[in-house]
Image 1 (cartoon, rainbow, N blue to C red):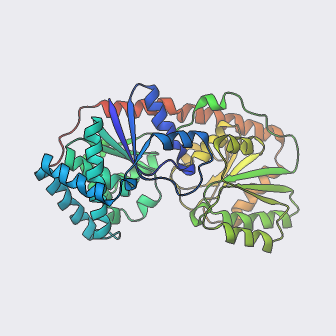
Image 2: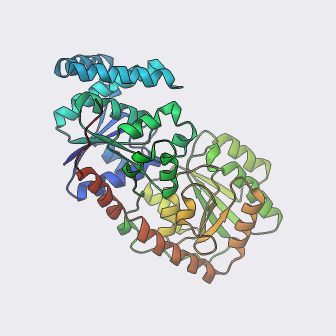
Length: 406
């Protein structure tokens, strides 16, 4: 079977879970064609990402002329289908915040993708995220008659589902994937109950061989916590700096490493300076996967005080590294992190509860932290093995395709 993966920006530092899924499917014998709208606009630091970039077709790099030519080529091949795809793009574009012009661009992209899917003789398409990549896959499916499916991660897709035509995509897809039971419940809210059986759960996964052995929990003090992710409002790093300031005022000796970058870097640096935390909080910038693992192994735990999430990969990686986790009672996180057993869960946005959790971790005995880490490692290895999860997805791909809407 050949599957065309339709993606927006790929590869990207925060999307390593897609690369793991693609490679796990290839290990199962599937042929995967990577088709992305655009490359990452920053510097790729991970060798695996660089390899993926070399294997990826980039639609917008073809230029406007090539996209228009693809419309004419596909129009000659399937005039009624290209007309229906254009009508679909216009219909959802008029109701979308993105607007009609962007959806006409998606239509041009879809014509090129459809042409490539036929040239590659791909059996089907699969997109990640329920936004524009899935729009392109849906339109390309209409043009080619070949089925499409997509994975929804959240939380962005759940904020304004009508604006991205998510209910339409769910109804027209052969199947849709959520990465947690919570995510599936949010998708079920959007469509008739008769569509629910086509909404599946496939977890994002880790590669167990990268965690065959884990470095023992550091015996040294002060306790070091690590936060990994894009610097944005929803990740809660600004609140975390406030919490660290209060932890220091209490006399608790703890350090924090922030791995990542993003639009809130300057406000974060300003807040660190304002609270005099320059010797307590360290920013590394983006790191490759090996660098992330080094930071996890050098830490006593992960802290992720997010306001909105799907089910973060960094939690899986921390637990696979036998590190306890502090995070929030939101989305799919409580499906993995068990409060009091593998870490601490606190209400999102509650600085006082976050301070208490950090204080408890920082003052816990090494044996308790090791026990939490061991239980967390066993749990994530059981639930998030990428080869097991890819086998589920491959099984869904292999099912008899549903007749596409006329």
